[in-house]
Length: 286
Image 1 (cartoon, rainbow, N blue to C red):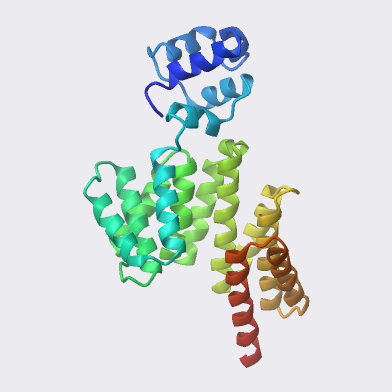
Image 2: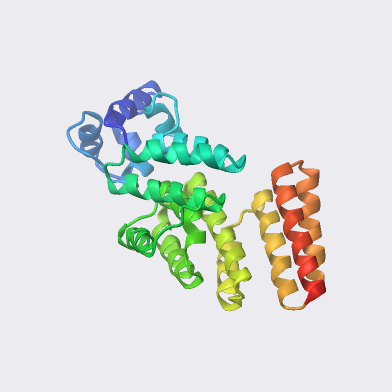
């Protein structure tokens, strides 16, 4: 996080008339907070999260303020890249990737570069990851002690490059290494998105035992108010039912499509209609 984070935290805390003792509670000592606020030492994320919770501030709000009321550099990058990908602008995405590659300096930068390469390949631009590059990404996921927003987004956008058995292992890594961070809404949302993507990929490969396990785990993560993810889950559940020969699966998929239609989620509606029609056609011929 920005090196001025401690100073910003102090300004926010004092603006709310909250003492260091009140801010720390049982999370850490006031001295630990004081050292962080005055730039004398860093602070563990778990402690920072507890302090922010005590002063009524979310992690995303704090990061937004620390970054000068802008999203993080990676967040801003993903906004631009996602728009290029969503609109199918493969050549523009390749140009973006080539310019980004000129600035690669760290392992995280390297992972972003490989993610961009994989996204370009999904748009049919021929930039397939080599086996060595896949091993490089997999080693990164295994070695990193905790997954935060960066790793979850990375995994979601690189998932299709891996064999199903590797996806299962990576899902286990993600679930084990994001347990604490799932209390952060943005991270939990991304974990659910990654799990839903994994369920879709594994269903296509007929790995039903793994699908059922991931499905059970995902159900525990879903919130009653999380309509879009529950709708995606309903569609995948219908697909799985159809794979098992249950006719009611078609109705579940149709119900999910109807929700997207009512919510006017045009991109999701079009994508699921294409998938649904393809599934119907496939099972007619089978």
